[in-house]
Image (cartoon, rainbow, N blue to C red; front, side):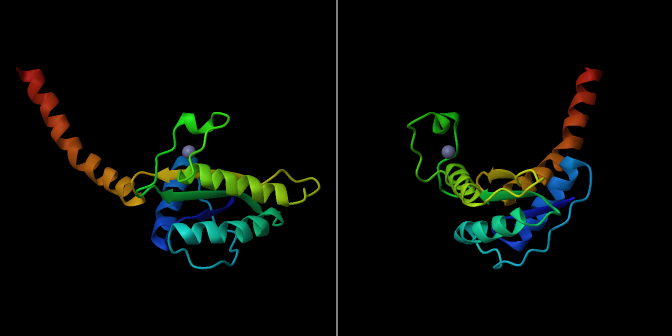
Length: 153
Ligand SMILES: [Zn+2]
């Protein structure tokens, strides 16, 4: 399954690929579409239009996964989705708007479903997701030991 990942660094993209493959239960691979090196939030938004256009016309491309760090931006909330709501700095809302505008600019391809897209926001950063795994792994023996102790008392 060809899935491209767009994130803020090569390391972030590699981490998201591992997480994505674990969620899907199968290995995914890039379409190999050439683009500028990932280098932060601004580069994600610059790479998005040409990457989506290339993937739109690539029959092997199944999906695009975009994951960015929230950093100091507002966290997306359901209120942002209400009509008339404006969240000018919310990165989810900004990326959704970018994806929608790009999709509207592309002519449909016969006998082909539109490119699937997924947008994720790591709060405050992808590094926190990676540390969560480490923290959970370290806590597991302690919580097991606590339960055992509790059952003896
Ligand atoms: Zn939002």
